[in-house]
Length: 216
Image (cartoon, rainbow, N blue to C red):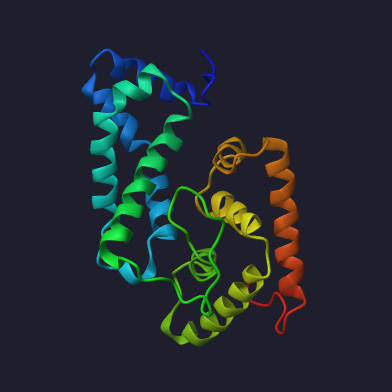
């Protein structure tokens, strides 16, 4: 059996079949396959003001409880790949947490530019720049890293919101071309072409800025 019409892998479909027949161990294995990808999504989309106050594992656990409660619904009529379904449920938990903790507080529009507006919480050029640069900077390099981060953020701010989201989905969340296209609601070929154009545009923009691509 190959991939299903929903885009699931062979292994995911096999585990779903086991779960449909009451195999709870299969359910645990199925969820564990996707935990790290969901953690990456949360790291990118959790509002920076909530960093340290909300644990990604707790968010995922709440989403998994909801997935368990709605599993029969998914098995009866799967409208998207299983991972994207889990990602959607996890994103909705983030939305709830943002509303609960931040209420009507808004981002400082002069400080950062939000990415493409979808059903999940927005991320920002600042958050994406930080994630793209990574976290393993020595204290002695903190000032250099800060300069690089600002330069990358400014370059991201000049881009179309969907292009920024494409980079976030592919480079950080590590979604496949098919998954990215489905999330954005565009054709896979169009998503692939737009992604490569976005990367080139980002590189060209950085090259034209003071300091160019040095250190990036």
